Image (cartoon, rainbow, N blue to C red; front, top):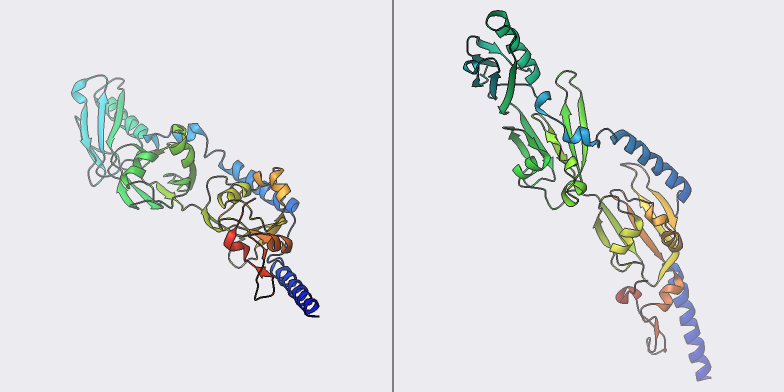
Length: 348
């Protein structure tokens, strides 16, 4: 009779334990859309983004920017060379009123003119009284009137004088480099002096800094604003070996993120890995369900993470029961013991 009661008690406790584990293993997040719709939506967004940035990533745009777009202002230092006679050559600084003093011409208004416009103006003035067919070359030695602004993940963000032609790496160095939280993209915003419209160029810092692609090292002009956002973050939780917050590298996939988290724990539900996407303030998150076989089959390499994405690996009841040492002898004197698998996680 004692043996029967003991066996019955063990069975009841074991049943209760299984029911408890089943309740604990119940899905915490429920799917709101399927994988096909999710992929279709974000693949189209990716195509639109790439089309929109095709111009910005063109090496000819990024590397061939010159001072031709720069407009002179007070404090700028220019060199004027007249090929017909060295006596007319000069090096002058633009006054506070936007004028320069040149041999024979005295005061010439160059305020807000480009180099080409200044050359044409000086040639016209010399031609009117002094030279038959003058050829003038103007070179800007110091761009003092322009300033550049660096904001975002910069060690010393702020506004800096634009003294001479500089490229992106130069201006980042002026501000003591990138901060530890810097992302892999830089935005350079430039105002067209004629139309007043602003154009943003996108520079891939990974290509520039890690791969040495100097095509990305674009010229920065006076008046430009350089913004370097913080790296995005994703959150990995549930039945994984190393749950936590991780920085999103360029084009990081779900598969890569799970690898950073040490892979799935042995008690994970292989068919219930959730990708939860932040849709913006006040909007519900989108949730899709992925299976481990899907990820191994390549799906995980086509899903790129966005800032504030969550990957949550659900637990299975049987996985919980058999993992981490699972059942042992001596639970409250009944012969059944349960050890939380999270205390002894094993990766797949």
